Image (tube, rainbow, N blue to C red; front, side):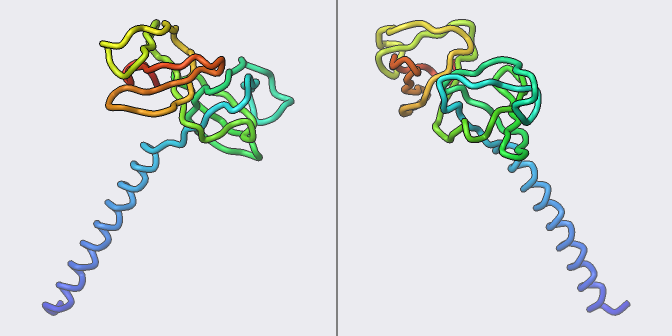
Length: 156
């Protein structure tokens, strides 16, 4: 094999290796950037399969965030903050930023910091629409209109 042929073969192998590494990096980042959607109705039925003929597992309330796992015929299979999965009609979900409380109890404050007064306390599973962010703090609004600030570590 000539010196030129050896260089071309070496270049081809390096290019193939680079392409394989790039492919896997893209696949990993696509998985890490899972699509999140939000319940856009006061309540909706979470079903065991993609259609109204499937049984209702539970109901999700307004602003409930979900992580998309699959889309099929207008239906979305999702996972929630506790790892539960279900199906909902995709037309009932939107892209409004939202969070759900993941701790047993959390304080919602009048401003972004522990120096601000507690406006109310919430329990695990309560969803909120995100209004803004300041550092590690998130400004939130519940579907009933209550507003305040919560620390980012307390929500999903």
